[in-house]
Image (cartoon, rainbow, N blue to C red; front, side):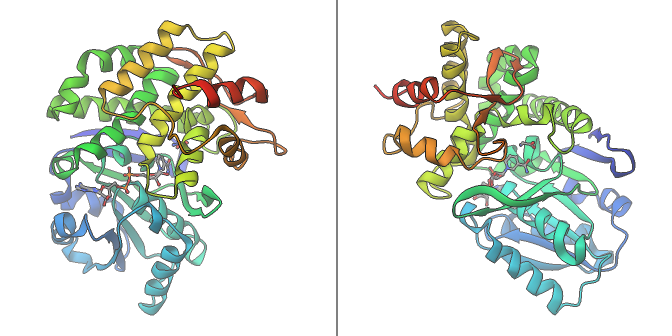
Length: 360
Ligand code: NAD
Ligand code: GLY
């Protein structure tokens, strides 16, 4: 097992990474102080891993709540279902919530933990690659609004993150690829050596080589922990973690939540951001090709959906948390391994990227 630390003063917490951690009763016992514990999971993950987790938490006699699966359920209605259950069971302010699942469950349960009785402790147990390398770390919690992704949320840090890498054995190939989009993102925004490593080791990751996967998860979490430690509330560097996300969120909202996986939408968005960076003279055409090629090798989509035109994109991109005074700001690339902070972008080059990149 590898342990990393998210350094946030008295709210610091460990990220445990390794196979078989669901069975490690001692790890959870280090962090859970309450008698009352609720595990929230979904209909796909619970049949696979809930019993194992419950066995490790026997001393707490945890209760469970199983929600339907899918991005469409990262909603205020699902949050209400959890509040109802917590209140019906008279859960107190010291109770602990456990999120067992991918980023949808993690973001949703984190949001409920941040708001139930003004905040109760929670633990992240991420079971997808995407959630192990990104969403479980850093305390961004949210639900979607029909008009915009993650528009209702809070910054709220977990007690710990327990990433059992053995849970990835049951993950669908498409979901593994979606997670690789966020892994590649770290190489692109701040870790050029990691981007090189990914170019040399992508096939091992796709083949689920345990050593390669463990290395990619650790290095991704290390990058994320460093960024969060210096900029928890996204006043600066943390915004770079959103490379491709303004385009990507527009795709997710525009197509309807769940039609395109988050990681897939981010992959397309990173290609669009790279194309726009080239048009602004910051990135060479060779670098853009290198980026697109790696994402394609990761079996990710790299062109925007044909039925989402430029004007609809622009309308959807106007609903973004990086915008200031209603003005669009994007994360772009100055090189492979170096992202900009949010920059105000003129509409014409953006329109050209939206109309021309991947449209032929
Ligand atoms: P997800 O939670 O929908 O999981 C993907 C699919 O895999 C689901 O069908 C899920 O039930 C299934 N699944 C989960 N674990 C499994 C396992 N071990 N075996 C088999 N199937 C399994 O999606 P995701 O990609 O994990 O997360 C995407 C969400 O994360 C989006 O809502 C996105 O906005 C959010 N996100 C948040 C942050 C953040 O910082 N908070 C960062 C990135 C993404
Ligand atoms: N995934 C973006 C962030 O955590 O800031």
